[in-house]
Amino acid sequence: MEFLLKFILIFFLVFYGVKFLFRLLMPIALRKLSERLMGKAAEQAQQGAGQGNYQYQQRNPFDQFKQAQGHARRGQEGKITVDYVPSEDAKQRRGPQTAGEFVDFEEIKK
Image: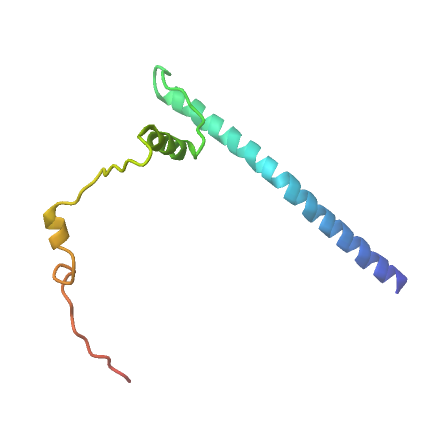
């Protein structure tokens, strides 16, 4: 009985220890793997480009968002600008008149 309890205790300690280490080390390993794959893809793109004039530039996914914020801040504070104004035709086409063809159906029960 003592052996069984000792085995179960050691099993759970090892299991949770491996689980904890996996959670710590896996993000690092995945980051390194993705960097390596992106580097290989960049090398292949440079080789396939002929002259090799193209260079891989690593970008932050939030760069576009930051640029949009920068553009918004350049304008005067409190000033509203509208980039798109729909035409009068687009306003009139809304509603069930242009939603498509409606088909009546009957439910058949067996």
